[in-house]
Length: 79
Image 1 (cartoon, rainbow, N blue to C red):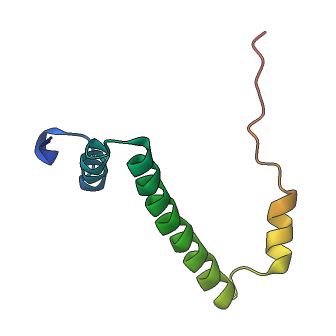
Image 2: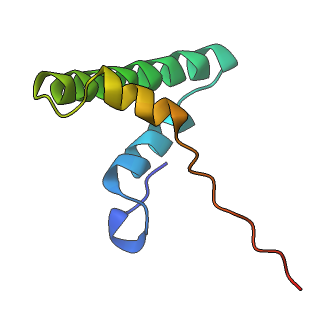
Image 3: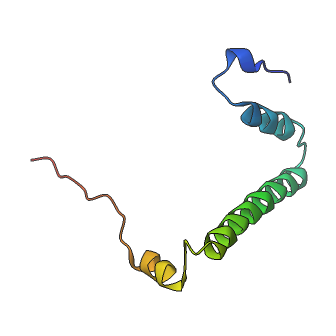
């Protein structure tokens, strides 16, 4: 499967992932690919969290504050 990035609204990364998914011929190979992607992004998130902690931008009080936040969008009921 070859897709031109020039005529697409997908990013180069999205196109590449689609190419990889196209090569998954079994559920097992798909599960392995998903795990690799999950592990990559989990590690990136952990690294960023550690950086924020090390730079003093996040501390245990801030994390506790986040845990108590309610960020749901209120529903506006039609009258």
